Image (cartoon, rainbow, N blue to C red):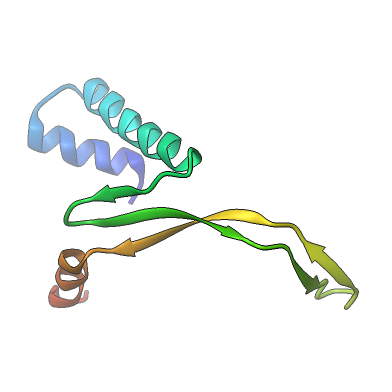
Length: 95
């Protein structure tokens, strides 16, 4: 599913113009992105939690040459699905 698919579905259900729906969805994604950039948690009730974790620097290996390298520390985003989302995914029939 793409952002355009989401816009189309919301457009059909709500009835606003596609331009307005696209703007709202874009603003939602920008707000989530900005909040995560600040290091804050994003909780969407009934869907899940997005959080940022700090990973330490560590030693790694270049798979082509086998030489050891240092992998810099970095921030990674994690997502944990809510119980409602897990239940919905596991109760729906697969195609």
